[in-house]
Length: 381
Image (tube, rainbow, N blue to C red; front, side):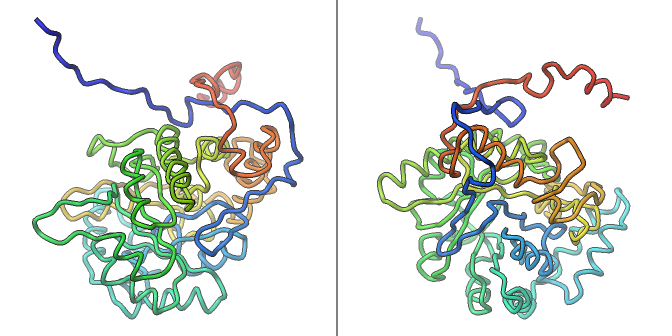
């Protein structure tokens, strides 16, 4: 008798299971180059704020631009549905845990107003900021020309899982290649976690790829659907596709690790795994400027039939500037992300982000606990 063919599984790794190996040469942190390029735009800070209603509004997008980063507005959310989104956000913040999901489902069924879509873009552009907006695939064909005409600079097409090929009996799926040719602006798509799907998406002409399914603090896709790959392995998969595509075509696609980043060490490990940038939600939602006022909820929370997110109370702990640049008096890595990245690159001898992508890493599940007996005691007290 022949042995049955059994499905094989690969080991995948998240941020807490790996460590970065320091280099043989060190560099002053202020001398490393952390610039991010997306299409014709260059950013001094390779950190992007997630397109979530609790994270980015026009004011936050403008402030992040001034700080050298990028905030992506969700124009499938309350900013595009309500003339006074602050009132709606206040309702969400003050809803009980029992009622909040039903409330969100009701709020997000309100129709999108094309005039508000254009208005939000124009607000950001009038302040002289680069404007990045996010749409779901189902609305992209209709709304992309509107945001383009309003002056938006970067288009993000985002869903829980994004592929270049979508099969449906009910509608004609979004063709990314057609959209890229039509819209004539940098397009970032997501989310993705595998080499093959990444490569197919890159072949459509996009400029950036979001990596991550389910790692966000307010996302429950992993619990509800059971899907996802830990972020270190997912980033390595997609970065390998980027490198193969660049070698074949000469076009470089930015890999953006999206979700699961809580502290500076997570951020640094994302770049060491191959990222060109990171997209962050909950740390930005904890800032005083965030529209969520200390609350945060997943983009799939309002789904009318199968919510895959939750509202979480995270509090307000810092400012946008301190989160990115410090100075900080906390020792847990939750502030001064840019300082953490520069210092990690300096210790590794990485002059550029591309150098950081090549530094060695090791599997080290005890990296945060080894020798930390007294810290562990304090955390449990």
